[in-house]
Image (cartoon, rainbow, N blue to C red; front, side, top):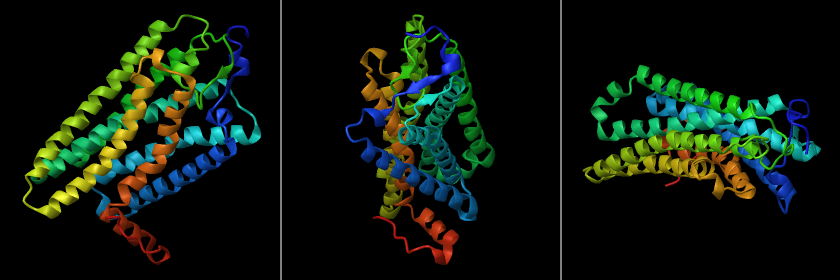
Length: 316
């Protein structure tokens, strides 16, 4: 056991998922491939949405922000985890740990709110198409984007400051892939049960209302779609919404396990897998889920990359 506050000088040791894996080299290669995939797919999606004027509409503005958040989120975690494994240096400074926690909470929280706004966007587009450009005018869209970033940043700042104010003396080893609240609190000298309860309440407050918005939006969308006279319109609406629902299920499922499940149900291995899923796996899959069956995105990709791009066909 080290003296309290020694971590201010020596920092922490991240004992991530790679060290505990039975085949760390295989897992390292898999994570590397997922990271490269996340960089390329999210980067291409951002490029296409930015360069193609036909995609300068609310739906793709929000989708572009989701790609940006995914790109930043996986970059906060993955390079550090890979470098630690390759160079056998698992340390992270006290300040570095605080910064990583703040960025991860900000990006994760912003994505949580943005997914709810994206569900509302689909609800307006399908249930109130004639008023879509009124309800989703540019000012409203940017307000949604700014709200996601600002609220998530304020929540992350509060949690980061309060978590890092504790004295840590139990150990320097964080049995986690990144600096996150609950694994770090296990190292605190003081009783953190009240704060853990506050983290739980905050998690419920931050996750449940947006999830309610998502469920309500898609329930209303389903009723509308089932009464559409056009089979083509019904198919297009279902394809668009099914992509969003897959992303929502992956993100909210992992976030609920991490922040809503009471601490008594947590164990290091489960938390490591959960965090790896929503910081490494989902950022790689999200752009593929949204774009592979989207003719508008694929068409824009052809136009932007031109003759250098191989033929792309939507998956039906």
